[in-house]
Image (cartoon, rainbow, N blue to C red; front, top):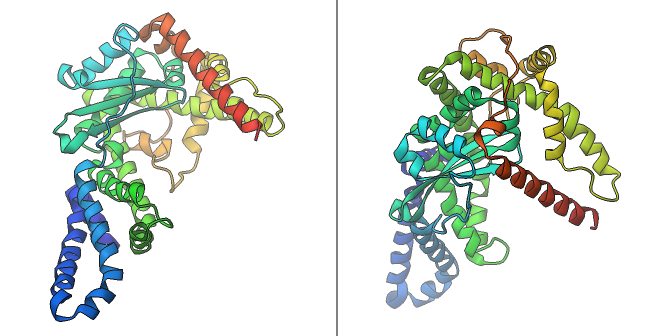
Length: 356
């Protein structure tokens, strides 16, 4: 049963809920036919049919309006990040770039998602998010390969880990938003009926995401320089290991006994990134990433699996970057303002946490 439901979500997206709305409509019609001939059964059946009917109506409404609210992410302008915009336009093309919002974040990551408001009738927008730490540990060539990877997600229509399945799940989320379980009868009934599906959805989301990552890696390798695609993966993999050991683990220990906020992680990342300029240390970190075991619950395959998909049986030696993408793709003022804003936000959140 769960396999059928997930298959419907993957194939039909948000319209997959019609498989549930149809039977609910039949039940409602049968119930209404009892009004004159069997009024007692009509009244008794109402306790079950009405929640089913209102849930079906919420599904229909959610099919149209799930994701109706347009995202308020502002992003960075071309004047603030001229090089980054040029890179994305070169990879994605002018038309796709024209409907993209590029935003920055404070993690070692890049991602892309698509927003289809009102079934796409009010337009489609792409949101490309690039982490400042990612810009610090890559150069323009490596970042170009990473952007080609993100563009592949758009071309393969697997943004959000499988866009159709994501929109199908959003239909349920829309119902729960306006009919919360434990508060409303309709929400509680729906949650009881499909709660057992959550693990199946999670497993399928992970499977689709892992497949999408491998496909995007291969696209980045075939659409550009295959060696640069592999180098980009290893630069990020090495940074992931380095930051975990030198930044996040020490920070975790500091927070445990802190009375006031310690130095923000982004400030530490920017300082620690300089150690990756040493070729021997960089490749040692890359080797650690290569031998790291695969986490079956992660939405990303292991670094070794991703590089194996590009034809590598062992981690190749890579050269450190000479000029960071942060220094060449963003204006200095924008980089300074964004870093300060992220540091300030993290410090404020940590202050609230420590005061609890």
